[in-house]
Length: 127
Image (cartoon, rainbow, N blue to C red; front, top):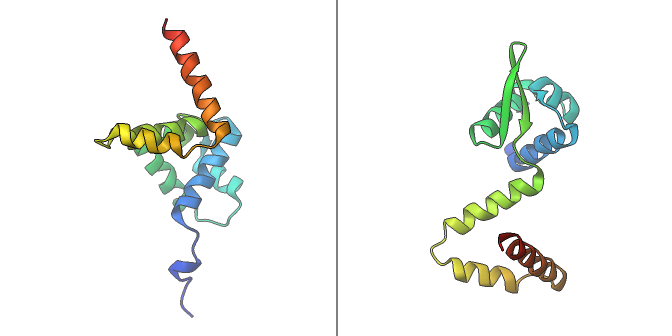
């Protein structure tokens, strides 16, 4: 009988998000084995180790020696990670003004008010 088909596997992005969630919740460096146990998904430890290594190579995680391997921890919290992605996307676009305009016009009234408040705070801090 053939193994699981690709469509039965868990999406890679979802697995990465779960690994990051475990590390953020732990609030301390964790080894691949510890992350794997916390996930409780029956994954191979090597799968978890590969994800952790790739996240380290991308700069999302820092690692420190731990026994014969490494312990990993996030460089930023979830909000910082999303903000970094937003910044990189904005930097890659030649029409930044258009992107910002479309972003602002798509905000809810509540989010728009939060953004206005944050911009005013930032302006006050630079004076």
